[in-house]
Image 1 (tube, rainbow, N blue to C red):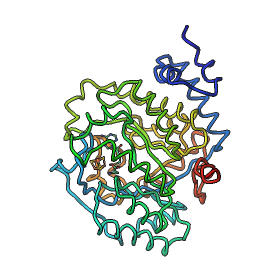
Image 2 (cartoon, protein in one colour):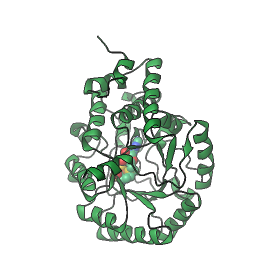
Image 3 (tube, rainbow, N blue to C red):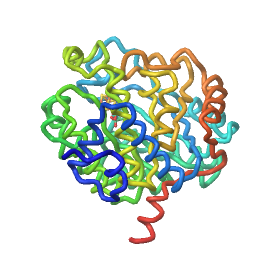
Image 4 (cartoon, protein in one colour):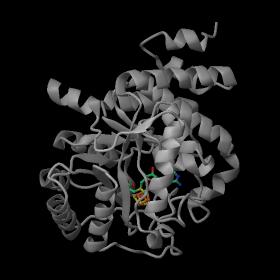
Length: 364
Ligand code: SAM
Ligand code: SF4
């Protein structure tokens, strides 16, 4: 007999089969029961607080060629850019003026001694210009243990490296078949990030070609098993100049991908009540209020894009990325109103560290 959603939600331990059942919901009422329950758990654990991090996409140079990504090195249509240290510092200044307590520094993947050193120096410079406790989330891809350690020692507190999918076979289908795109290296990096001591974030894309609901249920169990502190996950969206685009006709309709992404957030909140979960821009690409729906499904972090307007059009991971004609000012103004509209508050001046991380530190 198929268990009702209410019965499942009253059971504190969800099995793989329970998760599959919840992710497979098609009925509106059941979908809403799940979302409401996850939001309740979020409210009880974290309150009605939304933590902000300012996203700075400071370079689109990338040595990798992931089959889904618009800024892959094989896409010759992309105008490549790297922001100068001064431009990054100006953007950080804007973030501080707008009461952000931290930023996310993201770029394509670059690995060299010069790159490691540049980021190390940049962290020091920004801390001197802001506050020693200013929070850095780095999203700079796969690096050596030594590089992760150098950045941690320089004062970065968080690192985000999505596993993309925890299924090795699927990982191989969405990446070129070479050493630069190796699932085992990805996993090793994630383990190194945890070992170095970062608040560790990872995540997956939802609705990829060849992906099944079983894969996604296992992704959620993977996140739990890895004991991670933060998650950023969202719908896979196609980009016309990428190899995966040829599978566009086999994809789940956008609306279904959106609702499935909300159920992924909701089930994750039930599985890991005290982690930080980001409501991603990819949700907003499908539905204008998509990120607010993500918050109502149990997410508690927003990462408004602070990248200067002149660079945004060159950091297109997927087609129809929102807000590329805007400057950071426009984003901040509309954001606080939108958050208030759904009964949440931006927790300004709050570092918004992952409660899960603090607990993990205490038990080590
Ligand atoms: N280069 C770093 C890395 O790969 O970890 C950080 C930047 S990368 C652009 C950040 C994330 O963008 C990836 O982890 C991936 O999940 C996401 N992404 C790339 N292409 C995407 C697409 N077509 N749809 C949705 N997300 C995408
Ligand atoms: Fe490069 Fe990251 Fe895009 Fe892969 S996902 S091509 S590593 S920017």
